[in-house]
Length: 411
Image (cartoon, rainbow, N blue to C red):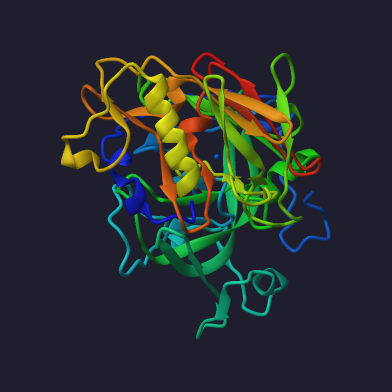
């Protein structure tokens, strides 16, 4: 989840009500449809038993974010968590849950699971988690917070996780997850927790993806305002490698085991006009993170302001200035998406073209707004609006991020 306060861009997500499902898979590894080198010496290592065919799970899209289904416990319970490349912890709301946000589906009940195993506070896994403490019952208590003010508190536990293979056979293993007993923040009733896909050892990528021989995964997100029955995918394992015509690759600047996926953005071109990321100082490496848990793209104020001015110059439409609901965002009246200009994000060694479907979103009928915002807090984010219709591969071993223009609806 982004390290950005939600008020910068809240109005963008108030009108997003898409629900996208279905499944698709690859082999080896597994894929899930979206509507975001573990080793035996790691304290979080636990081998997963997988059949030789592919595995999949259902997910949905919800309010500008993506929900991925995990099946936890014995008997199995479906958990739909927000897919978040900006965090590590996998957690779900658990009973008893005092002070928790309202949830539509039943919460996970650890006492009903035969395979639930709370971690003792003196365990290696507990001591490896930076936000832990010891409860009165000598269990590993955790507290994990997010930049938007959301927070989860509970107990770290090991639990069985089950996916479904393409021939119906189970793909069974176990993970360390957070059983959240006190959770609050910017959640809605469809959210049952968060599935962290960051680069840290406790993320789903590190706990599961690497069991297929590589710390690699890829995602392909559909634009948020497509038909609700359309979906994108996220794949783990060897076959998640992004290759073929049109692929561009940029270095991953993040340190080993670091959560955010940091890359270097040199600037953005509006049409043929280049707008630099930084006018007055030397360009810093790793100046922006790729975050599937944040809808909007956040840029430094000066950079954003210059980008907006160039957008106005190159657009034939007249910006809306008389709608207080829109604030200062660049918005146009249009029944269909804005016709240009095309943007190109210039990452180090990788030029990624962004079409209007990735850069403008409709907060209300007949209006499209620029899906980027300025910020002065230093947290710069390439959000999931811009990531749509791009097959994005994260390779933690090679320390690269690859982009390939893709029709994610028909992938």
